[in-house]
Length: 169
Image (cartoon, rainbow, N blue to C red):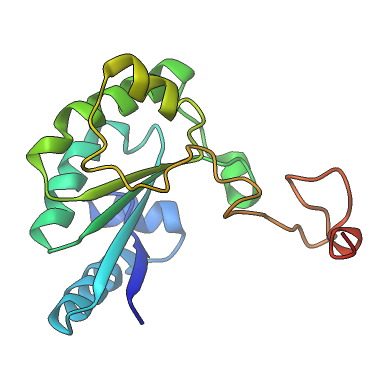
């Protein structure tokens, strides 16, 4: 095992637990990160950006770096499953989040990846940001490359056909 991904959506335990729907999830996530780091295993923290944690993303950066995390992935909300009921941030907030993150990256030793963010490459070019802290396989939107959600009735959110038919192609 090279790397383990763990979701951490807030520096506040109760906020993370509420988002994940499991009491004690924050404490278990942090303890798992510490245990993995003690064994020399690389850790990637995944954070879903929402209206509830938008203002604390930089503090999450600081927190996970202090824990020794190497990789930090910011996921922008994909409105599927429980995500359908979560209030998303505005397009302007997405832009500001990416721009601000690119600005502060040099302060941290984290490798960062933006997922489900098709505007990422445009912003990178506009700001002339360096790729030093950005993971090299960054595409912005991971649909059909790394991500596919198949619903219980076997419909796939990224294809107009059923998952059963997709396997034939």
